[in-house]
Image (cartoon, rainbow, N blue to C red; front, top):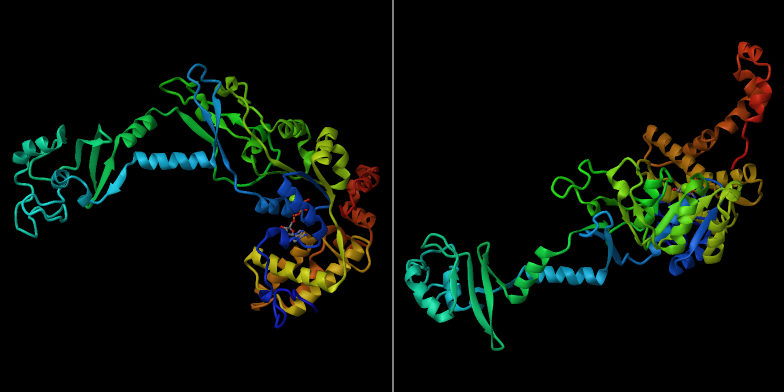
Length: 503
Ligand SMILES: Nc1ncnc2c1ncn2[C@@H]1O[C@H](COP(=O)(O)OP(=O)(O)OP(=O)(O)O)[C@@H](O)[C@H]1O
Ligand SMILES: [Mg+2]
């Protein structure tokens, strides 16, 4: 058997020796042609619709796309609108602006400076320099280790002298004979006098706050009130379950005090993003698109406009009067569904995907060849790694799984010379084999374990056929005679509702 020659040409004894690719798209088995399209979609930010039966990797692909996207570059905040608090503004900051702001804040925090590089009088005053011998030493040494003089004894006497030296001079108050922690003075820069503050931080550092830093500090204090709705650091992959409109489109939280200026929280602070906003610059994944049929038109509108307002959605809530316009939601839409559900997708939504993206029918089998055998072996290694609770599989055990993939292609997909790609089910076989190996206290999943699991891990429908030969038989036997006599239509009724499809 050929196993991942690329990774490890020889000596593959168990699934442990198989190298698992780092790129999640490379971990998707059997859809190589599709992966090429998906990579283009990620690069060009196109929408996608993945169509196919359950458990063949639709969610896996959708998730993997986000690995190929650039880091988000925008942060979205709701900003207080003083004239109309219930109409907060939206502010978008780019990564560059956020970094610039961060630097500004750091600047406002002041720069650290060596005690030797500040005027002597300041250094003495903050306790670093001995006023008797000029030696620099720790602020904690009140007696100079160099000359033995009392470093802080003459502070009051020196005050006048320092004042003369530095012009305007103000000492922070505090008991005499201990060093000051803050000195405000002035200095001349390009012929202009400016205020400068020296602060002692901790034991041995001085921070300088110049005119610019002081102005920035003041600005930051007066900064407009805002609340980050979609932070720069966020997930690129958002799965919308369609559980509610609120989850998809956002909301404004209730405030029992109705945004009272003193008691309540202001509307801008109560803005909650929807999945469409959180997916801004990333992927919005909607599994089973049909299940959110009533929300499809909102998704469509968001896709078209790339902005969608956030409004309070509960009419009883104080949030219902709040509306934030133009909240960005520039996402890549990835939808997934079964073939039978295609007809339930809103035609304009499908047309959007066809026009600005790709509709992809997933493969359900792959041809039998050595490369695909190797892929299945890689799949075994991946599933074991993901599970984390089961041991690795021997080469012989992997071969049994490969045989099982072939068998299932024949039985379920009606295809000869192929491997099935219904890999979620096949993953179930691996996990069951792993559990059997654990119970067996075996360090590896062996051929025996995999065979047993392949036999046992079959769907309930197949188990019924094995036991009762046909569904009809099973249903007959399942009903007690009393049930049958009470309702003579039972048999027919039940039979019509049996879904034998493997979709
Ligand atoms: N093509 C594949 N390559 C590798 N692993 C796969 C593949 N398909 C399925 N799997 C395994 O099965 C699991 C389920 O797959 P996934 O969730 O992507 O299926 P799906 O197509 O989204 O199914 P559903 O329609 O039920 O949501 C994956 O987490 C993975 O472990
Ligand atoms: Mg899925």
